[in-house]
Length: 96
Image 1 (cartoon, rainbow, N blue to C red):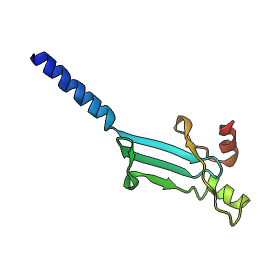
Image 2 (cartoon, helix red, strand yellow; image 1 turned 90 degrees about the horizontal axis):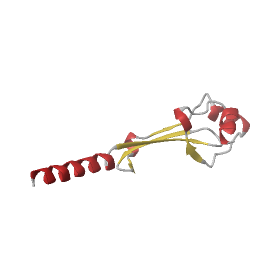
Image 3 (tube, helix red, strand yellow; image 1 turned 180 degrees about the horizontal axis):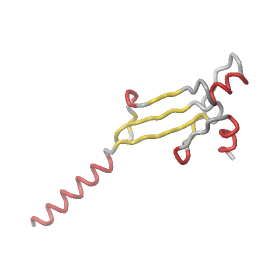
């Protein structure tokens, strides 16, 4: 009886840890290179923990030079291998 209760308790704790673990989703716009890092708990994004970053010296700066006066309609895609593209050429090669 005690073993069964202990097993059920351990199962509930493990499922709770898996469900309520912190999550991070790192995305980058496939057009201008803006990065977005969303953090949360239990698959709910917490804006105070999240980062929305405009790279004024890299991909976003290149995009702004090519498209003066325009606003990007962001198309966010997951960053692969935890290495975001740092130039527009890298960004467009990653799509292929």
